[in-house]
Length: 224
Image (cartoon, rainbow, N blue to C red; front, side, top):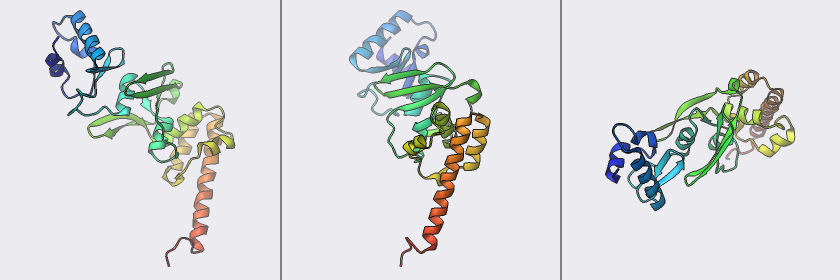
């Protein structure tokens, strides 16, 4: 296989799998050998066995693979969730360098040249609440709704119902949460710690709204 053969087969996709190159009358051993050589030279990056991306020099002019897209491709049948979604939605203040996903398979962690990707296991009855979103121009990936991302996080944390944990989580911008959706999701989840935590979060949102109304009613923050 020649480099131009690879480009013709892959097109403009920033990620591709070995299987794409093994269609038709090809020498499998030659394909595998060339992929190994191109990876060693830096022309390709092996994200995991069988999944490749173009190296920095070769990727010029191509669309860059988005973290959500990589996460979905690394473990098919997963969706991005928990702190990755919460940080993006502005619901927690921290920058989150790791992309965390939910899977019904075994937990995994991939440290790749394109980032670190963590997969957390949930039972099949918890595998819902995500949608296909455009996470970057031309890129669609499975990502949890912010409310489900929070439910997933609370479900996975044993101390979720502990007020100290919620304080440490530092949830902010509670007005961005659809509390009715969050409470419905907590009921569907059915875990006591999740129900208790969501009740506390709803109270936090109520207190935040009350505080804001009181503050504005006294003329605070109003330009004069």
